Length: 182
Image 1 (cartoon, rainbow, N blue to C red):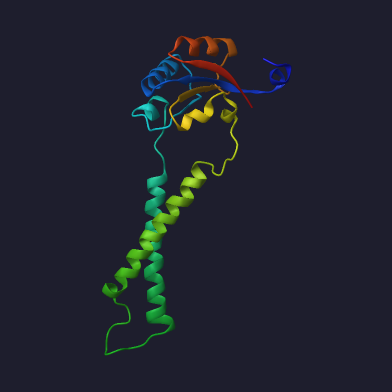
Image 2: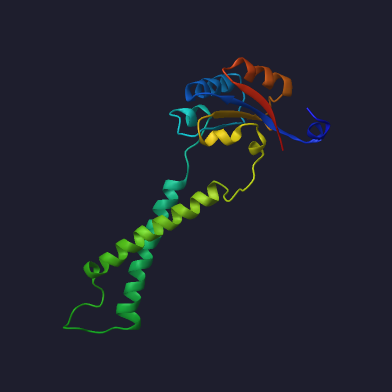
């Protein structure tokens, strides 16, 4: 390790794996060893990995529902305001507020509200845009979008010890283990 990289803060230690089964097995071993601040990177979804890493349920479905309900209320409110309050035109004795006639616009506003809430919620919850992340400094990390799998135990973990983590990851089926600078 060069002197310049030894002076940089350590983000964590990453291990590279050849397949998803090795990654899943290593993540299980890391959780059983007591590591809690770890992250996995994979080119495809790995069934069960989210649960092994200790992932929690997201609030995005509730946010989507809220956006849809607000869109529906907004769509109906706009139509009621236009038809009954601001520009009331009585055509053939029909009611000013016609729920059946308002349905298509209300439905479209529901879909629009849910879609916008989901889009904005995903960006906010995933902390996008994030053009730089320390894990990008890992050797061969460009292969994480093609055919390689990575597990990183971060230095923020309460049990983190540079040598212990390096030894632990070396004992898994990792092809390479490397330190990740901040």
